[in-house]
Image 1 (cartoon, rainbow, N blue to C red):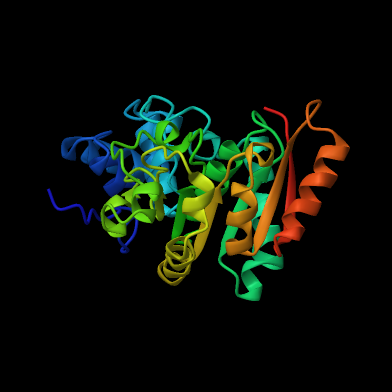
Image 2 (image 1 turned 135 degrees about the vertical axis):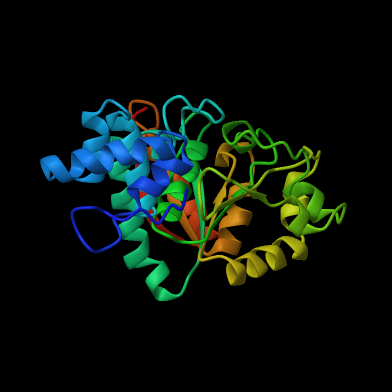
Length: 288
């Protein structure tokens, strides 16, 4: 059936909701006649008529609307990714609204100045840098920004598991020239505009690898191909990796966890990041 269904209550093509519902498998071509008939009789929107007939649920309609407005998110029954990706699974929650506020601040204070790269840095393990990096990358992608998320934690990486990456090679393998960089980029099909580069093979010398010129060149190359580049980093108490990464990105968002990170630790983190000639462009207090 031609998906250019005409709304029988007007002379204009009806909204793309019907097409998306068809593509999602929520309705059949045969259902559309019943929906259009009820739509005409009750003067309803297509989606509301489909709901009235019991053909779709509120969740189905929200999914279709998200596609129509290019604001894709994941249905709860999609268990492919980590539930920590709340920006993808619960985009209308208060937590995700906080990520959107952070995104706006970074747009105004950093990206509008011509910068594209951001490192996410914490003082200690368990403060949620990967959580912040992943969800911040998702909300940027939902804005239509072509976003690259890099796992720069070459000690205890988390992004491969969070995004169910099948590629075992990644950043570390690029840094030792084991494989071409473009082959390792993971386009996330369920989250348009988002690409992830995993950490790759865990090396015995992460600081030395990140200090190589090839890392600087990789980040420069990425900033020409993407609108936003976000790099997750290991905690600063595990070494100077995050300082090295921040010296390349030139800007860092500091992450702390409520009732865990001390003020002195955050002061020390700020001093160390600024000592790496990077700007502190934001701070997040995690409570998850």
